[in-house]
Length: 209
Image 1: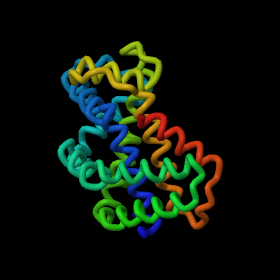
Image 2 (image 1 turned 90 degrees about the horizontal axis):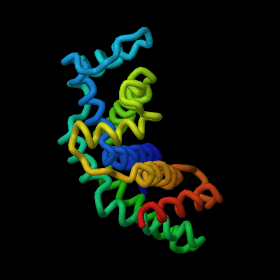
Image 3 (image 1 turned 90 degrees about the vertical axis):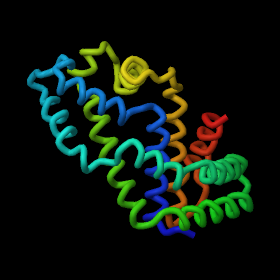
């Protein structure tokens, strides 16, 4: 069974992999490119230009697209998702034996796929996503594109700037949040199945269907 740090890292990486499907980090990188070329109508007193400058100057310290893709495929790919699905099904069905088996299997998987490098990558990605969401939530940028929130803005720019198909934002948000909650639950000292965890499992299953 993996230790708590490894499980928390796996939860963070799974959430990041789901948010990657929405294009949050590539969209933010594109905004920086537009800003540097003078194609982003910002520059007011809100301070967003400082954040954009910081993102550009710190680009070498972040995980690049190919590095993230390799990391997600290696740690939270189809095998991981299969075991997460087994655990979610057992939790939703209140199947104690099934929960025990699935929790052990997922924990063993994480133990074999998450180590020091993956924990460091999870911490880096968590910070990277927080910076990106901060920029995408900025009122000046939202107003520039007529978007209500960072998720609408991400979907809009993913289509316009990156040529991506329309994605189900609610689905990936739900998978990220519910999946991370279930995985993180395994890191706790008490594995009693609370209603919160059962609800998260049901939400994950509904979104994964």
